[in-house]
Image (cartoon, rainbow, N blue to C red):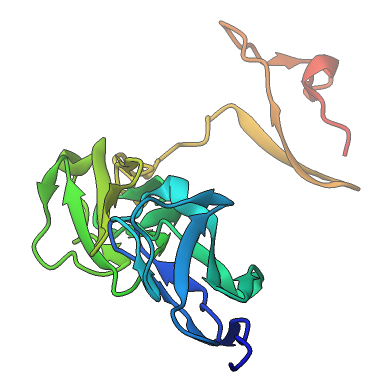
Length: 242
């Protein structure tokens, strides 16, 4: 009578990476004296009904991330278990999420504002920009540039919804502040030309520092005084020394 051959694993179960809601399928190929029996386990706990060469999980949840699946193969000669990194399932939540939020912008009337977002998740990712909760026609990329801003745009809030096959996420709101356009200076009142006259009782003197105007006192009545010799006498107060 031939001696029974203990089971051996010729093909190991491979790691799986799925998105939330998808299933993962693990399989093994074993050799040895038949019949062979299979028992799958999740993190060391036997999975009810998992007794075939392959095992398909229920739809995965984020809580399944990092779970380890192993299988024990048995026959009359013994059993062989496999537990290694190749049997590790990485059930990763791959829904879209914002990695960098759009930032608020301040512009003047007539300028444009540019908002951007960086998102991660299973590709392809789709984008839909919204202003005040209403979808913007054509705003379907990771960057959105507004038309030239008007004063009516002041305080508007912009958000973006990022989606993929696993779900969607909406960014924080970015606020657009629009200030009045800068106004170039203008002169509203020009300087006016002036015309002046020189007083008749002024006299121009030239000194070492240039010319100067000296105001001459004017008497209410001016009298000429002559001496006995017939010569005109002058008031010393009216004499200019040059």
